Image 1: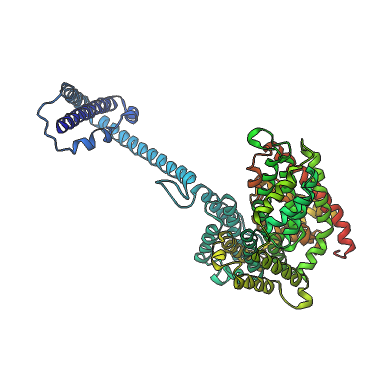
Image 2: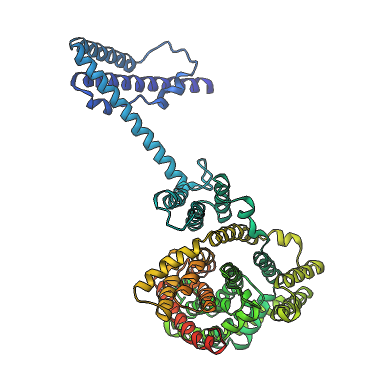
Length: 610
């Protein structure tokens, strides 16, 4: 019974397929005859037989003895249409038939070209949307962002004239560097992938040598960046960061404003030894803020996010930029900034103390005022938070007494801070201190090599940092940065700007251009060097230019929901709407600029920075 039923179904499907094929052939023949008689225009409208309707069925080996009426009727129509077509063609003259054949052939070729164009466009669309992990399609780079990056590089290299005084190699390096930064922003591949593709292009075109392309892999600052991630892992693994933050909340968390100050104090303290602003803000403080807010009845899911959550989220988020600016090791981009400045000849002596000396007053004032500005800009509905100290107390009890690993990590970080602060007096370079600290943590088992090897973000950052820094060194070596700064500075001077006005204009352009960036490091890598050179050429003291742009590279990380690595985490909590986020971002960037420029300029004069 089963075989008979299956056989009947196959016979029926085969008959239907043959009927559809016959009908398609009939339509095609009729339209072909009409096109030969009336001209090639209708040829493009002729449908093709559907290969899926009968191709597979025709391969079946069933022997059908009975033909359906539909099939016989369709075959008769096909034969009649073919006869009509032959008669129509035979009734025409030779030149007329030749002309129609030529136009018909051209039409077919044009139609084929259109189909190929549509297919290629479809491939690009699919690659652009599914690239890097599409299901069954292209799994490599996203082709549309890649095309944009390559196009920018080709435009600079071959369409823009090489300026006088710039070598072809230097111009090629500039094109490659801009294309690389564009790729890091548009992300056809992860940043290390973009960097390696750019390195490959540079090697194949002989724009740079392998030694020049990877020179920064031996740079001490890059190794400091890598080691900083390992210390951050130690805070997360041992729970020391959570313990410090919870202890402060327990002490001063009785009011909403006091809780904000407690979180900011903890943020500033941890920034000294936790050199990843993203890990510190998103990994330690956001979970803490979220927990405290919900404990006090502020939950976006219940529509009560404005009770305390929106205020606490913004206060904590905005504090990150200032705490990162306070300490040299508060953010990875701080180390990169000083390394790039040294390429221009503006090396900072005793970097840890010089940085702290320049940042301490404006950073501490900004951190002290941030909760008050947030209290005004997005006032909490609930002013008292008696639940916060209780929640902190409960979590501290769950954690238990301080573990041996926490104590070792705390002692190592404290010792490193002492050695960093007295690096000149002790004669111990900063990277030596970091290596020593990591060695102690590995030796005592606080960290394992598996922990370090598993820090994907560390190795990722190290890889593309190094290649990008190597390229920027070549730009400076070949005189591109100097040429670019001189060209733009000349235009600024021609506009009648110099000294303080030129400094302010350039600083504002540098800060607000971050609306176009989704990475603080990418922004700094692309614009930091030329803006230092432009400021110096316009009359700004070199150290003022170095530090002001470095501090700005931290504070603009709160400008938009995508301005920094930690921004999407805070925004994703849904405590603050998108409209309010942009409004608050603008308010706080103006506030920070007023504090850092107003207070900073006075303080930097006092300490002899200019």
